[in-house]
Structures are given as C-alpha cells and as structure tokens.
Length: 214
Image 1: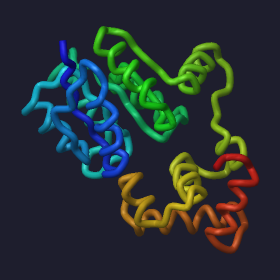
Image 2 (image 1 turned 180 degrees about the vertical axis):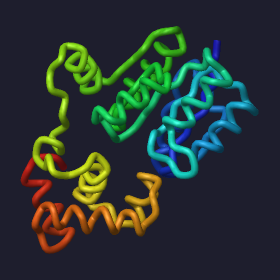
Image 3 (image 1 turned 135 degrees about the vertical axis):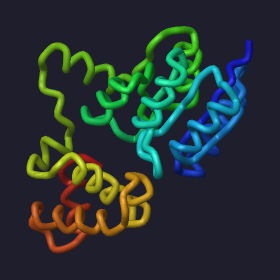
Image 4 (image 1 turned 30 degrees about the vertical axis):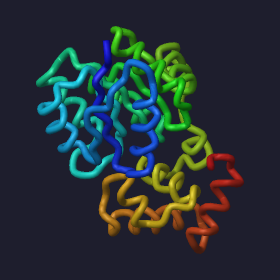
C-alpha cells in the first residue's frame, strides 16, 4: 500500500528536499506540498492524504493551529511535526494539538521515512532529543533549553529570534520563519540587545555562540 502524504513547510528549498527524499522512498507518494497552514488544510481537503508532515512556524496559519483544525475535521489523520524547534513550548503545543510525531529538522532522510511508516501504522514517534524532553517532563525533571539556561531573562520568543540570529538569519528570514512582521522582529532584536548588553546583532550572535546555543 502506498502512503499518500501532504508536506507543509514555508521554506521552499527545505520543502523541495524533503519532498524529494520522501518521493524516493518505497511505498510513499507526496500528493501535495504547500507553504502555509491555510494551504495545508485546503490540500488535505482536496487530496485526503494518509498522513501530514508539517512545519510549525509558518505564515498565515502556523503548524500547531493547522494541526488542531485538521484533527477537528479529520480526527484519525496522522500528523508529524517536523521543525527546527525542540523547546518545551513548541513540543508540548504540538502534542496538545494532536501531533503523533515530532522530529527536529536535523533528522536524516531514513529517520523521517521510518517515522512516516511508524506513525501511519498507528504508532507515535519522537526524535531522540524530543523524547528525552518528554520523559524528563513527566519525571518532573527540569527541561529548560540551552538558550533558556544561558539567557534566562529572554522571553521564549526572544530566544527563538536569538537562535535564528545566531545562525546568520536576517530580519526578513526570521520574520518568515517565525510568522511575525519584520517590525516585531526588530523590536525583539532591540530587546535582545538590551538584555544581553551588547551593541549590535553581531555581538549578540557571538555571545550566543560562546554560550553554546548555536
């Protein structure tokens, strides 16, 4: 049986590469690829896929909200979140929305394909680092991220911005990835510079690298 999949990610090159990996795997067919949550819902309604693989940070409608809406309409639809985020806020938001898998984008093609087959077969799959966070959460252990430990004064959104800034992303790219306006990004960057007591974004990125978060 061929698994029919819809892929959602707002980064065209990543979406292209992911689609290529899945299309080459035995027993998988990508029936649609889209760049935002609203398009994802429309694609599922049109193609009735066996599984959805979605990013979380997307424009128009993010992956968590899209997951929630999809499962309200199609409760049995298996959904895997594939994202760059592995902090508690994103992990547990996706799980509460009903995602049955959560992989970080560092996962290789074989891991993603295995996850697709496992979740389509009724299982639940979480990447190693995410699984450890879930276990730690239910064990009552602290689950703060490296960024939160290094920069506790930053808000969760400011940490997201700092991590992308540290990876060399400019404001327009951060805006696109986090589904916020460039004005909001500039405000976050300004707050980050103030809280880190650095003069510019280059110094903030350097401080992030020195703290081991990038």
